Length: 397
Figure (cartoon, one colour):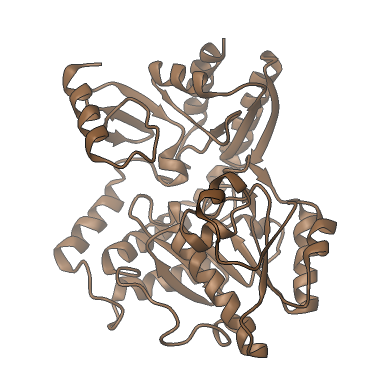
């Protein structure tokens, strides 16, 4: 590492709050599916900013849209209408099949809004505020207090208790364990359609359909978190569309803006008409013209270029190549995931492999200590997968 990059890292360690153990590179620019550090070294990127940069780096159409919006209007507040937000809401409704949209600044904020909508829906039914939410063990929904409260990893929560309260945890893909947590106070069940941080585990069709039927029977709201697994990542615009199990409330973020910080929660008309009203929820920046110009262009490109269809082509190829890698290396114990959201479970921590890959020009991350996570830009081709596997093969050795 050169002295200049080392100086930047030292400056960062003195100035930034130490909440991340960062890899020892300073990234400078991106092009296609590659990133370059400050010294010009090239890296194949199989992280995409944690499933964010779906369209790859330097998409000229996307960049020009943002530049044009910057010259027009960045921010107005939600006391006024703006055209990019209106157009983005129409597009996301079409893509998702949901009816009402609220734009946020992040995935965690989308979860906060979803929780508030569910509790308000229940409050309007019986006038009490002691309703319960069932969440899943090993889930991850974000770092704010509400999102943390429904995150099924005690390690993340323990220093920040008490959370928002009245949260019960069940086991993912175990319907009996969900049933055991239901009371007459249950107002919502929240889960990721594919668990991300918890180990790249998709919900089974049987589990999703049984939970949906339970929610219908008892007027419980089903909240599906599609922040990481949505936006084409599994080969469908949203992962639940594969099973036809539509949520009452859905959250989105990450690839929704392809790099601009933006999220959204959406709901059916029934929930929209019977939950949050003027004064119940708000955001200063959410839905601003810049973020929504990004969303609008991203959704336009996704639909026009059939990004989800492309994932259905290259996702199975990645699966095949990772299966071959697993057969070759005995320390790889399991292969999980869907589309371009896959994981390899190792019998030991994967940090050494990630560091070795970085040295060899490949960017990877983990999901838990023992799992390598693969969430590349959705525009990767089979040749990129071949290049990644060739580097990773050497690094595992």
